[in-house]
Figure 1: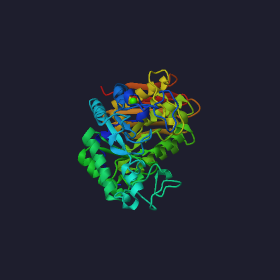
Figure 2: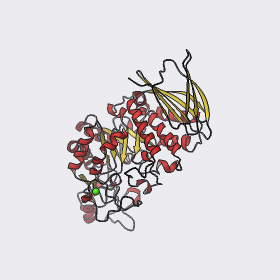
Figure 3: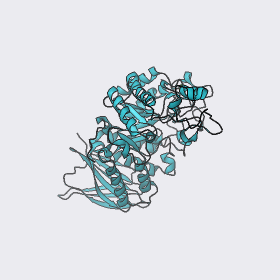
Figure 4: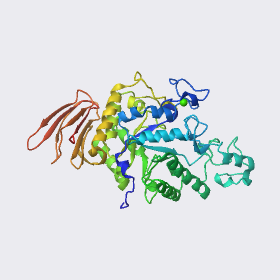
Length: 469
Ligand code: CA
């Protein structure tokens, strides 16, 4: 691929934190629904916890200390459900979350600390309470909005089976007809509106594969017209390359990377050589976009990292260490940094525990240290990678950028290993050293032929970063 990469410059340095707004923090009890449940309740598909935008504003200090510099919020516009992927009004912040003013205040609070914010754009489908769909239910083919949806048979019926295309076949979520220029105009208007109204920094685009390529090109032109460095991140679970080239989207959620990482670090069913080959093949697939794909270990659509790791903190920390030292933009799902547990939706959407009692402090301390290490070292954000050792369960690589360099060593195995790594020319190491546990040992031979002797327990990680001072 020889296309130019036109991803906004700031994305190279982004460390993204995903928030499910109903579950992060409740900063304003006055906007809670009457049937709000106590914060410690187990989540189900219909309960509301009262989390809101003010709650996020109240925790900006927490986010800054954690070290992240970009927020991604799952949908915040008026919608009947707690996940809000069923939009009723694209131009209103849901009243349980706050107002357009609260969103502006959040954006300002983040920008004052050099943090960005992207919102979730859900354009493949809407709620059946979306006013245009209600009109089609009433007036059928005579409705001016009849062509906004994919109706198979008039009159439109919702039950027993919808007579229109719907997300997952659910009558409550009719699909939008994105081939219709009026829908394309609606998408573009929404894309511009929240940049102009609240100064957001881009969009995460839900089920991006459902929308035709030419529509994303149009959307991109309009959004970039409103903000020249707005980021467009598509949701994809497989190969996203057809949606990245030719002026469409900038990046994709890299679930393929997640699968690969889990095979090596969590399920331990690939060896280091295979793992390196898979990771490099994936990066090569994305060509000029490879270094800004959004890598993630979990989201609101997957079981929690801690649960996938069978409550093994060492495995969680090892996976986070790889996320934060590998090439690609890391995304952390709220709560994973404190070891929150949970299976598939709805269990992966528990309320964020505050106060620290329910935190896994080992995971939190490691997350904070690793995120801030990435923030301090351009080698970890923008550097090339070089594999120094890939053998059995051992992986060692270096990353370099200008005068900054970092070495990372992993033992993804069941038993301790002692390894000797020969350092390539000019690889300056020393300065900061981070060990995943006190059992990780390090001896340096500082001769003309520098070597490192490293002792790594199972799930051990060692990071050496040359400090920039
Ligand atoms: Ca509230």
